[in-house]
Length: 99
Image (cartoon, rainbow, N blue to C red; front, side):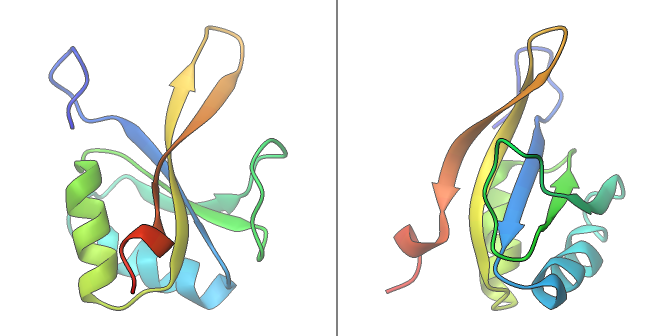
C-alpha cells in the first residue's frame, strides 16, 4: 500500500504487552529502519501503552512480518496528518488474521 507520492505510509501498531512491542521493533527495523516504540497517542487505545511507529514498509508486509514471527499485535493504524494533528485510521485488526 503506497501513498500517492510513491512512498509508503506511516503506520502505528498497538500491542497487548511492552515485550511484544519491543520484539516487533526489532523485527520490523530489519525491513524498515525508521521504526521506533512510542507512547500510544491518547486518541488510540492500547493495553500496554506503547506502540510501534514505522514507515517504508507496506501494510501487508508489516502484517506478514508480525504474524510469521508470532508477535501478538492488536491493531495497525494508518497515520494521517491534517496539517495540525495526526489522525489514526484502523486498517487491520489482529483477530481478523488469527483463528
